[in-house]
Image 1 (cartoon, rainbow, N blue to C red):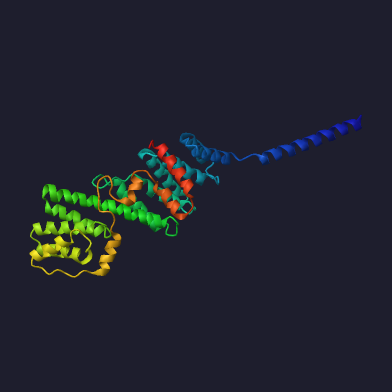
Image 2: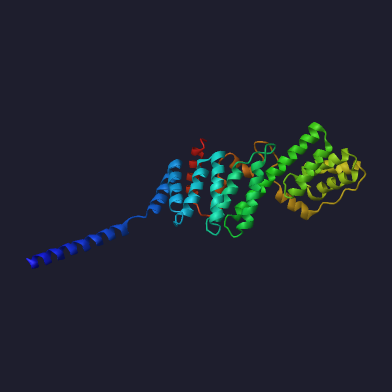
Length: 326
């Protein structure tokens, strides 16, 4: 009897150990819930199911703040708003990307977050003559990108976008000056706008036109010496300008010498020159593809690094157009 009891106890002990080991093995093989939330969120994001994606990411962020997947979830949560598109969503995306940079400033994706902030403001820019709130923000965020992440592979595109944004800002200021000059005949106000363009945007492609109009406003105000200076700038550096001959005539009429062309300055200005047919709808060839949603500026930056193949870029851009109803 005692032998039977001992045998039964031994069997029960062995079963308990076996069950314990099996349970331990099952727990070891279980996928961590934070990983499950992140992977589910990414699947939803890939399918453009943005609300479901955000629910998964936000649950992960609030429930597992110390998870290795939390930084990725913060970035992906911003991406869900960025990809869905529209001003309200882009502003939400900007808030998410700022949180990412604030909490993970040394993370490898911090530069991408800053570039996306710059890109979404760039996407919201309006053409010359319209409100330039987002144009100024795009300029500021691109400058921050270049300053804070100088070693990023995205910098060449950021620099290109900054030049383009400044062209629109300059043209917008010039448009206001044109209004004062042509509609109000307020020469002092026009002069202030044209000087702002010249001083703040030295690489403005239309600067020869600005020089000419600035000289006109000063001549109208009887400030001949200053007018002569700006007419002369056209002769010295813009021999290709359609204002070149007119500026020469003005100098002759004012009985002032016509200066020689500076070939170095002329060559530099020629390099800065872009399409001259500015309008409110097509301010520059360089940014028209962005304004018309043909190419997302962030995706353009990634393409220039060679990270995304052409077919992937086409797929991404097509997806965004569909999301925005274009």
